[in-house]
Amino acid sequence: MRAGMRSEGSMLSYCLRGFVCLLVVIGFFGLVWLRSSIREQEYEIGALEKECRGVLRHLNALDAEKATLFSVAQTGTVAAEKLGMDFPDRTKVFYVERDRGNVPYEAAYRQ
View 1 (cartoon, helix red, strand yellow):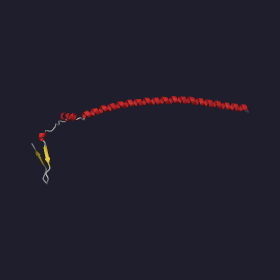
View 2 (tube, one colour):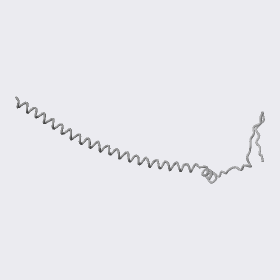
View 3 (cartoon, helix red, strand yellow):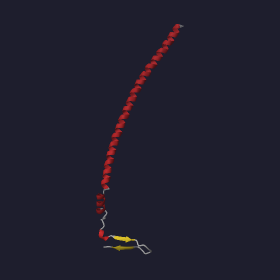
View 4 (cartoon, one colour):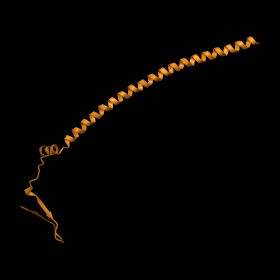
């Protein structure tokens, strides 16, 4: 009877040792996998930050180009050269004055 108990206890101890060893091996490989996946995520974040810096640099260049296109000098040049517009001669300006009363509006040329 004692021999049966010993073999049963040793069998349980043998299975428990095997289970613990298997758990340690699985835990070790799980830890290695976890560290490598974190490292991979760090590399991906670094690549995305680099791409973000490039996009921001391009955005700043576009903002500078937009500012030059909308500058007063550039707008005046485009209006004069491409659209044929010109600044008005200040001596040929019409003034419209409103009279108090029921008379129609008059436009006059002043010198």
